[in-house]
Length: 172
Image (tube, rainbow, N blue to C red; front, side):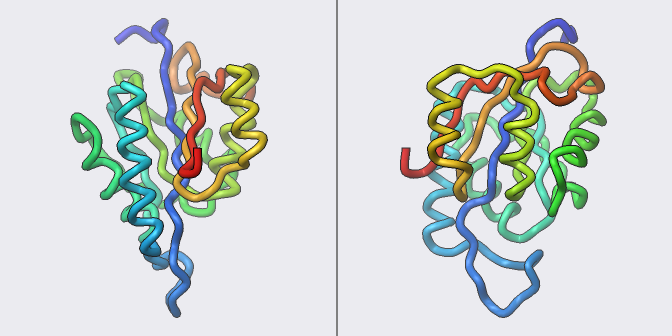
């Protein structure tokens, strides 16, 4: 694949988590979260984006979200469980994304707020007006995702270089 072709990143926040007496890292999905994760997977499939790689936080709720969502996709991408995605800032997430091999065109990152929303905002130097308006109005609730696109290599990904193409949240 040529680095001249646009790359897409789906920034996917984990679905609604439960609050049992466990560490934050081990919190599972709530019942609503399990339902929303599958719906988000169907909506992600509807985008038609062929995902090459999934980078998923190691937290229980992100792993469960991805497990339910990926079953809705037409093909299962390679999945890497990345500890650095848990509690990461937008800058830390950019560092992780900069390490992506250039043969990957489309990637989904399954993570947490405020990092995922912050990354969508920081990367998006421009936006489709409707997507920006929906994201601004809704914020980034559990199971929401944003799709951003940029040109160049993964090493060139930095603030402001991407375009926000799409945004979806469970109540949309």
